[in-house]
Image 1: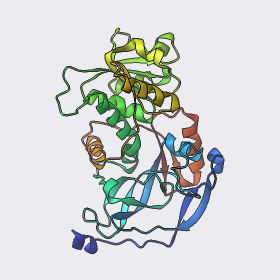
Image 2: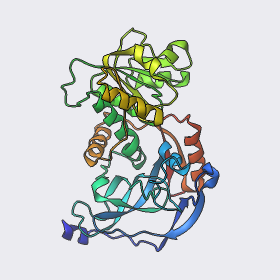
Image 3: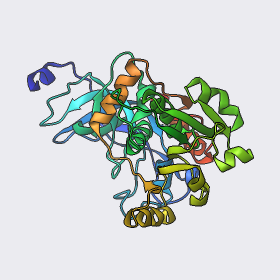
Length: 342
C-alpha cells in the first residue's frame, strides 16, 4: 500500500495558501480576516488535502464567541471549520489506506480547525474515500450534522439493520436545519414514525423527505409539540433551544427520551438529575463523537441514494463572511457550503 502511494500521481503543493481566520474572540462575521499563510504539511498518520469545499456548522461560530473556552481553540489566530471534502495531495508517514489523488471527505481536528482554507491536514482515522457518485458538497455536510443525527437516533434505539420493530414514534424539532434534515431521513430509514417541527415554508420539504406529520412551530399545536395523531413520542431529537422539560414531559411515552444536541448548563443539570434518580422519562445530552465507521456508513447512504444532503447556499471562500452570517442568522434550510475555488 505504501508503495502504491509512492507511485501515485503527485500534485505540486504551493508554499502558501489563502485562508480565513480570526485572531480574537467575538466579532462575528466581521471578525473574519482573509490571510495568506503557509501550507501545512502532513505528519505521521496524517493526510494533506487540497480542499474543494467546507461546510459551516453552528459550533464554528459558537467557538468564535468563546463558548468552548478554554478548550477550543488551542491558540489564536484560528482558521475555523472542520467538515471538508477534497483531494489527497500528500500522504504522511504511517498512512496505508490512502494515496495522492484520492477524493475524500474528512472531519478535521476541532482543536486546530483549518477548514476555511485551500489546504488542510486531516487525520487518516477521520478521513473517508468519496465515491464518484457523491459530490464534494454533498459529502462535506456529513461529518458533524449527519453524524449527530445518526448518533442521536441510535441513542433512542435505532439500529439501521432491519430489526427496528415495532417502529418507534419520534419527534424531530427544528427539522429543517442541518441536523434535522438528516435526522428525518435517517429516522425513516430506521422504520420510525416521524413527526417534525419547522416553519411553514418548509412543511412540504419535510413531507417530501418522509416525515409522517409536520408541525409549524409557530402554531399552538407546534409550540406544544403534540402529535396530530395523538401519539406519544418514544424519542425526541431536539435540535433547537428554548423548550422546557414541562413541554416535553406530557408528550413523551412512559419511557421516552429527549436527546438534546445543544446542551447548556441547565439541561446538563436536568440530565444528571434524571440519571441519578433513575427517571423513566429522561433528558439525555449528546455531544457527537467523531467516528470513521459512522462517516463511512453515511457516505454509503449518499452513494446508494438512500439519503440526500440538502444544500441551503453556496459561497466562494472570498465571501466566507456571508456564509458565516447566514449560519448565525439561524434560518438556513440544510447545509451552508464554502467553495475554495472562488
